[in-house]
Length: 166
Image (cartoon, rainbow, N blue to C red; front, side):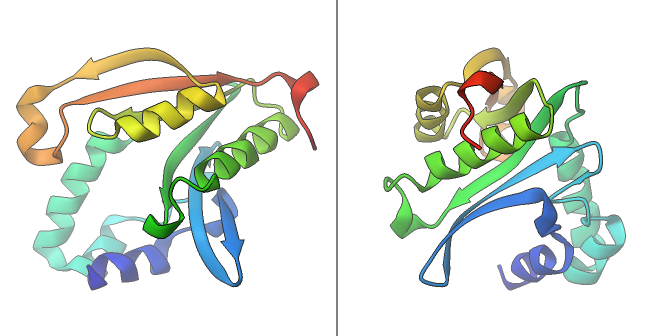
């Protein structure tokens, strides 16, 4: 766990994230990917090797290749979201998603896309409540042993600039 946290501190690009902070404590973070980079852009084989060792870097790098997602034209990609356990159910996730929607609208994107794993139904309900719509679902039960999940749903939010509150 300590090595992973150090990796995140060393490699994350905060310019590609939205946060919710209260009383100096980060309650949540949502990363995004655009044509200029991503929250996770700094994760390279060298940074993995420095934080996890050579064997750990090979393992992590192999797994991370399965998570790589390409951007479509006019699309902002949510590259992960995390809410502190004691802040869940208090609107932090909704605030983060709304920040991303406004950012997408302000920067000319037509859609905001994200993926959610099948073992996280609470997150999928949150996304749908905010207005995301499932576009496709992929199943790969043979990889459950590796990832801890066996399916991914891709959801999309269509940006309507007339509804955005800047």
